[in-house]
Amino acid sequence: MDELLNVTYITIDGYVEINKYRYVYFYCMFIVYILIICSNSTIVYLICIHKNLHEPMYIFIAALLVNCALYTTSVFPKFLIDFLSEKQIISYSACIFQYFVFYTLACSEFFLLAVMAFDRYVAICKPLQYPTIMSKTTVSIFLVIAWVVPASHIAVPAVLTAEAKLCDFNVKAIFCSNAIYTLQCLKSQFFVVFGLVGLVDLVMLPLIFIVFTYTKIFIVSYQSCKEIRKKATETCLPHLSVLISFSCLGLYDVIGARVESDFSKTTRLMMTLQAVLYHPLFNPFIYGLKMKEISKHLKRLLCQAKIVSYTNTEC
Image (cartoon, rainbow, N blue to C red; front, side, top):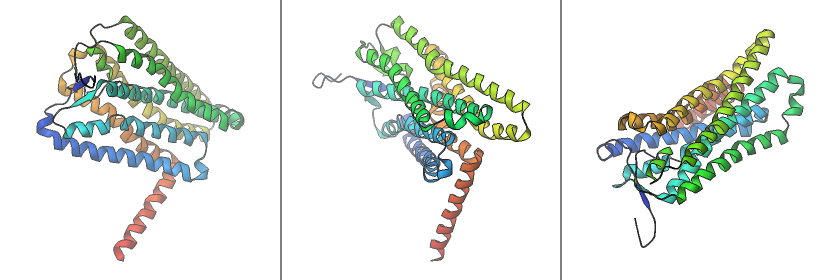
């Protein structure tokens, strides 16, 4: 603890042999981070510039990918700094801020997926009412709720954690996740109860809503013509694949926070890296390849890039 500046520093103690593999870690994570930012930005760019993609479904996809990029940015720059530093430390206030941003964006992911499920439900089950229900105002309200509600909820434990007394200054993780609760001298029952409430409000309820919505969609699609079934498959399966992968990785974080000693340091590192790598990295590929309209514009963009590259080479 620095008494002159009155700043508390936390040691990040979740890396495996970082002194030996620091440059391997750095180059691999740097390349992956650039790939995540570029791939997500490309799909968002295509949605922004093409007017036929200015529909609620694509706007929500763009919001999801922006959320993914921010989600990654909440942890990756600190990773890169840690890899090149002799000591992996972070101020406690910055640690709390990272915790707040990371979990806000993670919970926003479930809200955005729930909104996307509702959009597909209206489009497939109530097509005639779709323009009225999914107006620009409705879309804007959904997007605000998707980010504001999780932020408001996560702010409560973040503020209370910032004021808690610490008896340990080594967090057994590679960033400030739920593991920061192990640093507190007294483990308040409030955090346990509020955490369970948050799990229900921010994760379970959106998941239940999504399952109910897609069940209705598939029932209606099954009873409808082949064209409706094809439309449901093309637009819903990408959302479901993203939901399943993110839910499984989120489940690890919840379990890991409660059975900390049951995982080795290497296992914890690998699972945490999957949670912050897999989802942001593969989302743009899932939507870029599986969504027909986005895929069409993406192929055109790649063809133009090849032509420009070939022309420059010839010159």
